[in-house]
Length: 171
Image (cartoon, rainbow, N blue to C red):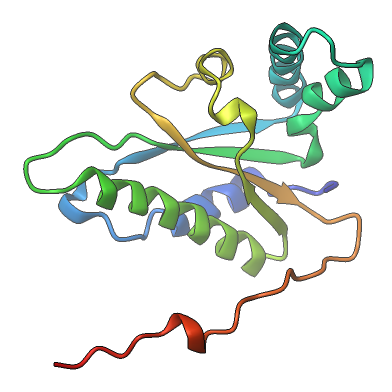
C-alpha cells in the first residue's frame, strides 16, 4: 500500500466507528497502538534485529523483509486485546469484541476510501517483538490493521458456499 494514509481526523473517525462494537459489561477489552511515519521504520529496526536473533541463517533479503513489515502501508494500527477473567463476562466474549473492533476498522476505513488489510504475523506472537511494541504479557494482538491505498489491483479470494455451512435447528 502507498500514501495517502488517513489523516489524524480520519483516523479518529475510523477509531470512533471501530469502538461501536458489542462490549458486554462495558469493559473496553481492547486498545490501539498506532504506527505511522518514522515510527514504522523504528519498529522495523527492532523487528529486523529480533528476526536475525531468531533466524541467524536467514539472508539479508529476509532481514530487509522483517524490517519492512510496517512499511507496507502508511499507517498500521495494532488492535490489542486486553481480555481478563471476569465474574460475568467470559474472556472469549472479550476477545470476540476485539475481533469486532478489527473488522469495524476495516469497514470504516474502506467506507472512507482507503484500502485495508487485517493480519497478524510472527511479531504478534513473539514476546520480545510484542514488548517492543508496548504490548504486555497479559495482552494479545487481535490484529494488525494496515491502512493506505493499494498499489495493485485488488482481487477477492474465493469464498465458501454458504448452504453447507447452515444448519436449521428444530426440535
